[in-house]
Image (cartoon, rainbow, N blue to C red; front, side, top):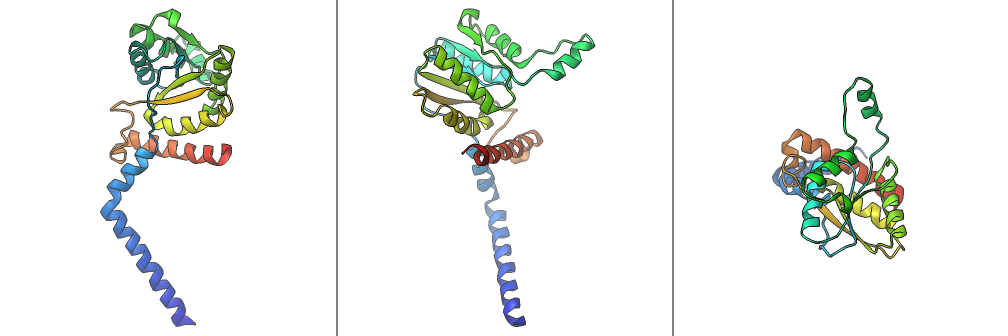
Length: 215
């Protein structure tokens, strides 16, 4: 019996050593693949509106403005993030900190998007799935049939899964567009920078949660 246990133990050790060696040899392709798993973009098709997901308005707003000027859609929609508790705290001390939707509108305005071609969807959003619900309601009440969704590149996989779930059966087509930036998240070598690594692990955790919670 003892001999049998030793054989199993040796096999487990050899297997672990083999896995370690494979990871050592191929860790870069594996890590790169994991990073690229978070990023998706769909083929662009002309739409009724470009919907900017709340978050980094400078990056997402800039990509939305670019698509607008290229003629992919005649209107840009912007949503609010969660209730601005932090901004309200700053305001108590006379410090003005813009809410994300206000900042995003400022970026769009700076990049030449007319105010008449922008709309802020009413209501604060505590999660991506809540944001998807607000965009669905807006699209349905305004007779829209297709939206181009713009968000940060690392946020695209989870966003597409979420919006596909919420928009299921609505007959509204959604197209995901990744807004890439050199400093925020680079899927090719994300493990070499602290900020990229933090973004990767946080987003992967959220992706797993959303898959277990909503699908």
